Image (cartoon, rainbow, N blue to C red; front, side, top):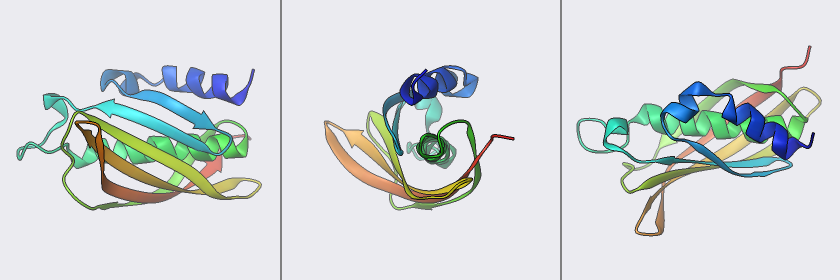
Length: 135
């Protein structure tokens, strides 16, 4: 089985991702793109997407990018996120790429965009470390 099919199989096995309507929309040998439709249930009291949803998108896309770069199962070891502006629109997009890959860990960067009327607005950036889950 190729890494792309592996990634989709792993993603399809994530109940929380299915629950919020997330999709794995693009994968590469060291990158991943995930999307989440913005619904009322994912907003906080000001009408913006809740920071936890944005954080989920950063964490999961970072893990997929790092896992693909490491060649298989992986886990996030840590990540940091900066919220730049409120997320409003119809869709969130998280794009991550592994910027450094070693034998057991990868450091990844992620940009989170809110899409409204086809226009992408950067709303958060994150960086994280992903470790191989191989024993």
